[in-house]
Image 1 (tube, rainbow, N blue to C red):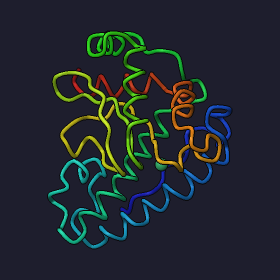
Image 2 (cartoon, rainbow, N blue to C red):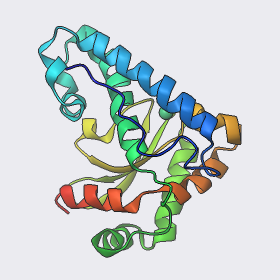
Image 3 (tube, rainbow, N blue to C red):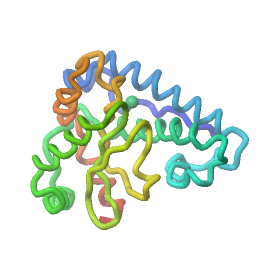
Length: 202
Ligand code: MN3
C-alpha cells in the first residue's frame, strides 16, 4: 500500500495562536503530501513499498543506491511529519509527569534545562532540520538532524521533534525561529510523548 498523509488529529486552527491556521494548511496538505508522493514514486515496484516507513528509515542501507537519497529525504519527511502532527494538541503544553518527567530530570537536570537544550539545538540548526528528544538505548538525549533525517537512521528512537524548517513558522514568525520554538512548547502533547517513551523500553 502506498503511504498516505494521515488526517490531522485536530482542526487546522486548533493550535492557534501558537501555530497559525494558514501554516498548518500548507504544511500538512502541501508539504507533507509532497513528501508522501515522492516517497511513493521512489518505492513503487520495490519490495520496500509495503514496509512501514519506520522500518525503511531505520534501514536505509536496504534501499537501492539510486533511490536512497530520495527515500531518505521524502520518506523521512513523511515519517517526521506524521510524528509531528501527533506530538501537538490543542490541549498541549505544560510539563510531563511520571517516568518521563523523572527521565528528563535525570538526563538534563531540570525541565527548563531540557527546554533550553531543545531550543539551542533548533536555533543552531543551519538551514532546515529538526531538534529531537530521543531515547538512545541508555537514556534520553537531545539531538539535531539536518533536512528530513530521522534519529531512527542512527539507531535512536524519536520521542518528540520540533520542525525548524522555515515552512513550519515563516508565515507567522518570519525569521524569528526562537520565538516559534518558545510558542511551540504550548502545543506539546506530553501524553503522546510519554506513550513513545514507555514503548521505547524506558
Ligand atoms: Mn515541515
